[in-house]
Amino acid sequence: MDIELLYFDGCPSWQSALENLKIAIAEEKLNEQIHLVKIDNPEQAVKERFFESPSIRIGKTDLWPEDREDYFLGCRVYQTPEGLKGWPTVEMIQQKIFAKKQRGTL
Image 1 (cartoon, one colour):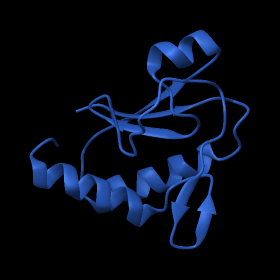
Image 2 (cartoon, rainbow, N blue to C red):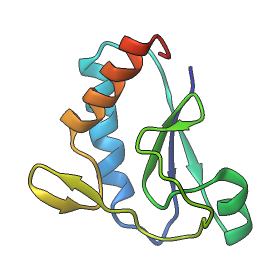
Image 3 (tube, rainbow, N blue to C red):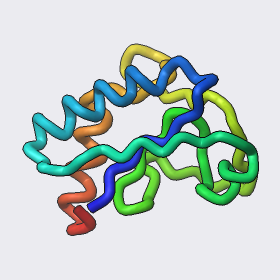
């Protein structure tokens, strides 16, 4: 299973997302590595179907998919229990992992 964190250098939130992702994976007792995917240019954003930074994918599927056709370098915003933030909480990531386990896609 591939766990990826997609980001670009201009986004300050990706490191917080990475820390939360590490915690969620450890707490869920997943023995998987996180692959960092740095998006360097608009062409790569389109090729990777990049939903902005930070984005987390498991098995090439974004944990927060969006119905869109535009992909670009930008900072993503997540609706968290504490309001809008630039990264998902540990609990939000765990909920997505749990849902994938329930569906048998993890």
